[in-house]
Image (cartoon, rainbow, N blue to C red; front, top):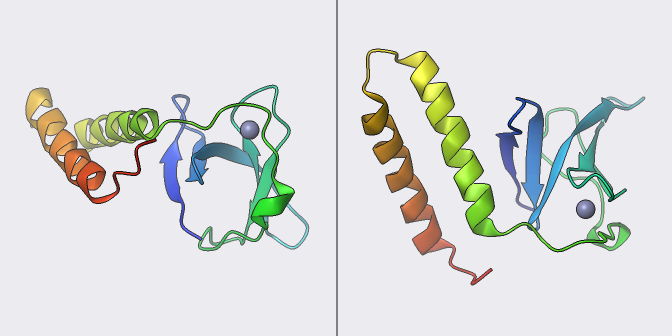
Length: 117
Ligand SMILES: [Zn+2]
């Protein structure tokens, strides 16, 4: 099962999985991590192991009451976070150069995974 790690606008760790986005909720007794859907009205949660390398929840246990998050929106957020991070790391670099480079990365990803979502 594949997923992407990112951050919310507020800097909370998130994972994107099957076109849904989950924010870090809590660490459970066995150190597994519980993640909750970022849509406020939705109660769906998934679990990962403590290293966030594997999703432990089966897909059939997840029932969202809303539409999927569009790939484009997710990518936009990843670009924004990457730019923010890069801008902090290398303050000598001109911002438009940082943004251009991150956009190039995303365009490549989009070409590879064009699933018409
Ligand atoms: Zn949901």
